[in-house]
Image 1 (cartoon, rainbow, N blue to C red):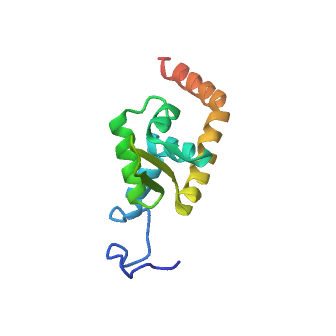
Image 2 (cartoon, rainbow, N blue to C red; image 1 turned 180 degrees about the vertical axis):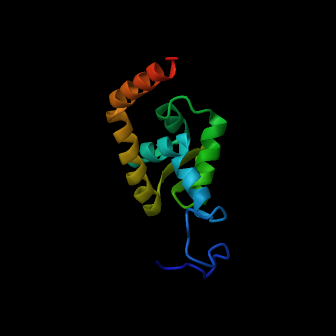
Image 3 (cartoon, one colour; image 1 turned 45 degrees about the horizontal axis):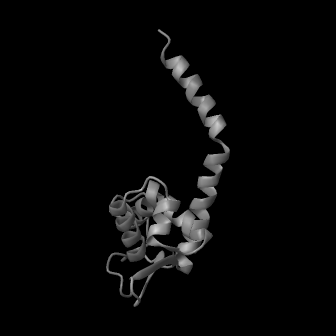
Length: 133
């Protein structure tokens, strides 16, 4: 595994997701958070303006969407492009790194959708066992 040290003081050794001090844990949290996954999956479809993305990711607050986009932009997954027009227009899209991450989380998200019946059955079975004396 290549160790990226030049310009990256946090990575003075190979990343190890199991190490509690590894910065990859924070990135993993950003990418796999509820809103992180949904934003990445949506942006995999196409670029969106903020208000369009908020409608696409139903249930996310304006504040949480802004925070999620900012975090994903900082991590290098999202490109924010502000256009100097009136009214102001900002477009969001995935970077090549973001597209790569989106492919992985999209596969997981769609697998969860496809397997919800099995999960529901497992939950009912579990709850039935847990409620017995």
